[in-house]
Image (tube, rainbow, N blue to C red; front, top):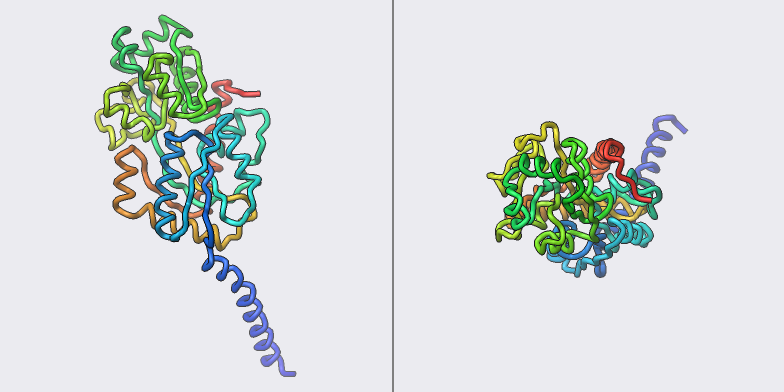
Length: 333
């Protein structure tokens, strides 16, 4: 057999093999989803994780013409629901709305996790990054003359450990934002962890706790209603949703920067074609004008990046927060 003919046959065979291998993946992508899809939220209803998941679920439900349901599985700083998602069948029908806590902070804070944030999941897409916001109970603030971050620092230094700082749970970004604040200002507060944003905010507004570093979207309505008083956002730039609220650096804590984020992940082993389809459809949903306007009004920035970009982002966030955890000494057995 002549060499050119042999080469052509080899090339033809390789092409047919590639097509044969690609067909099942293409078919899986075309058929998905054939039934309900579940998004596990590892925090209670009403918080920013829940808000992000419900926006995504509503839009994907329209796109796929299949129900996309949100399942709140709260507990242990997001570890309970995240572990359940890690154990789910890797077929694309159970997803996780992961957070900076579940996939960047908890592995540094907790001595042992019931899941591996890298090995047990495949990234799909970053949905929204958001600022955290330092906010206080207005009655507490008025009683002690606290109108600014400088006022708060002065009061904390005069009254160490007397202020109750609520958080959405041990190891969450709201907890670590407060720990970073105390480290950088030389102040001390009493940390009171809750099982999510909704119960924490209820107690801050009710006066059982005095302040919180919360994710902006879950607090926006209460700020607008005057039930919480914002002192500063934790990001390097002001939030367009609250342009009159200074950054922590502008308020006098130079070099302070922290933020939260929420992204979609699937159990490890989920077919790449299905991951690609989910990412593409979520990204398209986040580009729709009504969806962008809804999220931006709550202080969130729609993303929709690729799985590779999300993976790199999470690695960077893990390294950043590990330093914050080490500096603060925050640990959970």
